[in-house]
Length: 267
Image: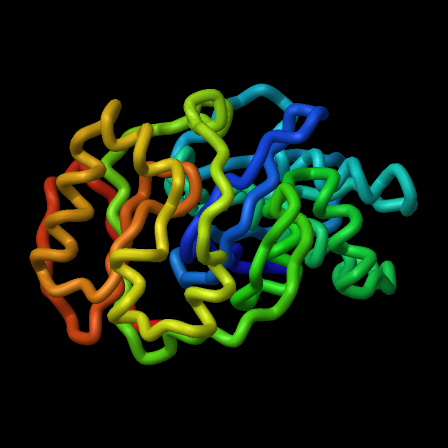
């Protein structure tokens, strides 16, 4: 069975406070975008995991294998051959690894008729990573808590063009959270998304990670300015970076250095 795990962007990202357990409370909107990996899982006589495309760390405990082993603790899953063709950049804030994990859960559920509904799959997904749960439903969702509390939000970018630009900078999640200063905003992400037009987002819908990361990686701020100068009606960094994106009403036809990875399409 073959599936195509997709990326996500964050529409706004507020880091509200740090909990006693070390995790951070946040508010954001996860929005799916069709920059996709390819994941194939078939029954086999031995469990194997192979990767093509973008190289990923070979630590023997990839999140896709973790997803398989997680379900295997409860269900008598047979050995499988897993092949992941990696396209979504790593360390980009696009949730590619989380998508691969969530899609592994869903494909195993279907392939072996486990009978798990979305709520049950989400419980498994949360143990793999905070934003893995989003990819089970894979539609615009407002996320709170550490990213695992999800509710539907009435927001659509349908018909808009989106350009994703990854400048080949890998940013670790630990790095950005170590640098962040939590702060509860005056206006929440949900209030902005449901009460303001996209043309008004520029001044008020922020990603809190930008402030610290733009100082360390000036190219990110330059990319954001370039996207706005090229006609974007909204531009932001996705998640913990370093992918920048711009939302356009028309095709901007922009070119970037060959070492940058880009995706462009209509939503």
